[in-house]
Length: 186
Image (cartoon, rainbow, N blue to C red; front, side, top):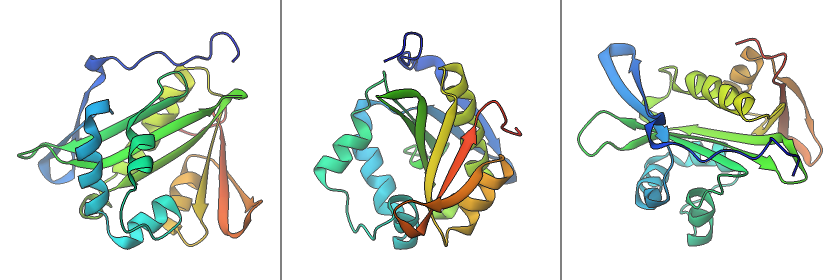
């Protein structure tokens, strides 16, 4: 790994209070290892369509191996964030992350998902802006995401941030959006 591009561990005080439309409040915070149950509940609360949009397959459940992969975050290559509703039990309502390529640490793949009941409130946009800012702070120069060709909302969000969209090398069902972080519009 190139010197200076290793990601610093997430600090517990990196939580942010987000005011949302309709006088709602949410909290952005780093994902923690103990969030396994919260992540499972978040996934279980997603519609089949939202699961398909996020994982590109119709997952009915998270396997233990996939749940471990999502929550056992290696801070040197992988940064992950959750948004919790400011309601009893503080349920996770969104998840966002980027993972650096170990061979090219200035390049990272990102993914995000927002709970169905919370979509359309600007959470995706705020999470994307947060991921971009965090990636820049840690020396990432290029973010990319693979999106289903029919996922119009995510493709529009990527366009809004200035992503270059192109056909995916694995086929017509996917589009690869690439953000050169020195050219991002936000």
